[in-house]
Image (tube, rainbow, N blue to C red; front, side):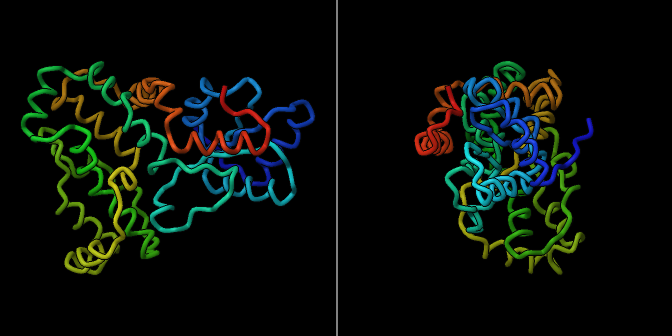
Length: 277
């Protein structure tokens, strides 16, 4: 399905038109997957608006605040913003607690439910025994090998296109280990650094961070897809089914305990509007 980008002005115009027949709040989200997650968790007095992008989401909040349009709140993926110190401080702009919504869900029981539903019990147990650590820690360790380079790309303002830096390109399907040496060779070939030694030095100078804050949800789903092709079982559920399971598997009590949810609730108190039931 093709998703067309909207400008910030188009998002605000859409809300302005809807305001004629709607007295409740407007909740702007980046994309369709965010909408699907929040749709079953929002109050009846809240209307979701899909901006189709982070830039248009942030821009819509800035424009609506400048024009004093009330009752609008938005959520966006952090995408390393807090590590880089570039988060925009607004009561009605809510950043995810980790790099994106999928990584927030990864840190809940939704991940455990996915393993139970699609993993082979003995395969999962044997795999965990072999890596000698819990599966979440292992996944973060692997995904951070890619996440560190994405962070580096922004931290040094390199502007290198890393769209084809995908999990399947570097992973061993049996061990689920991402070959960091191959990743670094790829990065140098793309122009992220002049050689591997220089790249290693650049990586050492990055700020401290938790792995969950640099790992990307898209990579997480890719790793799960590959895991369920053999190492963790052979169910082969596919990307979309895993994404749905991740969104639907989290308990509402866990969502209510998220810091970002507390920030939404704070905006509700300040604005007198409802977002959550």
